[in-house]
Length: 205
Ligand SMILES: N[C@@H](CCC(=O)N[C@@H](CS)C(=O)NCC(=O)O)C(=O)O
Image (tube, rainbow, N blue to C red; front, side, top):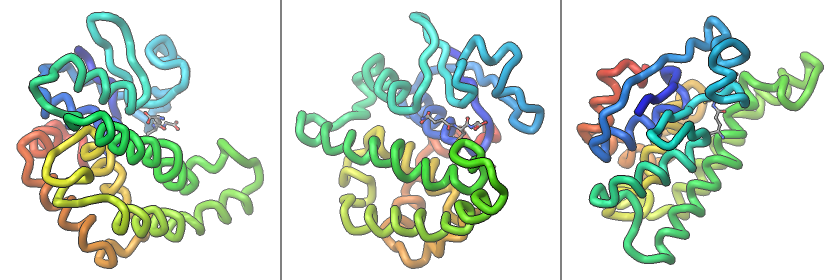
C-alpha cells in the first residue's frame, strides 16, 4: 500500500493505524509548501486536494474514517474496533465528532478561505480557534472514557485520530494543562511503538 501524507496533518492518524496493524506501506509526501495537494499529479489520487489518501490493492481510498475502517477490516487480528456493536457505534460517534467538528474548528485557523473571502473574516475565524478547540477538549475530557484510551482500556480507531488532532492543540493556543485526561491519553499514545514508528518517519513534527 502507499500512503499519501504531509507531516503534521490528519494523515498521521492513518500512518499510526497502518503501523498498529503491522501493514507495510510506502510513504509519499504531498508537499503542501509546494502546493502539491492541489492540481498536478495528485489530483488523480484525490480530487479533493487533501491528505490522507491510501492506495490499496483494490483502489484508492480517501477520508480518514474510511481509511481507518479499511485498515481495521483487512487486519481484524489487530483488534482496532471494539467487540460489541454498541461500543463500535460509540467509537464511531467520537470519530464523527473529530471529523465534522474538531478538525473543522482547527481548519478555521489557516483555511478560512474555504468559508469566506474577506481578510477580517479570516482574522475573526482564526481568533476563535483557541476557544472552539478548547470547547472540543472540554467536551471530550468529560464525555470520553480515557482509561487511558478514548474507549477505555482497549485501543481503537478513535485513538490515532484523536492523537493526530491533539498534536495541533499547542499551536492552536489551547492550554492543555486544563485537560489532564487528554494529557494522560497523549502520554499513553506516545509510549506506543506505532506512534514512535510514525515519528521516525518524520510525520509527527
Ligand atoms: N475529511 C478529511 C479531511 C482531510 C483534510 O482536510 N486534510 C488536510 C490536512 S489536515 C489537507 O489535506 N489540507 C490541504 C488543503 O487544505 O489544502 C479527512 O478526515 O481525511
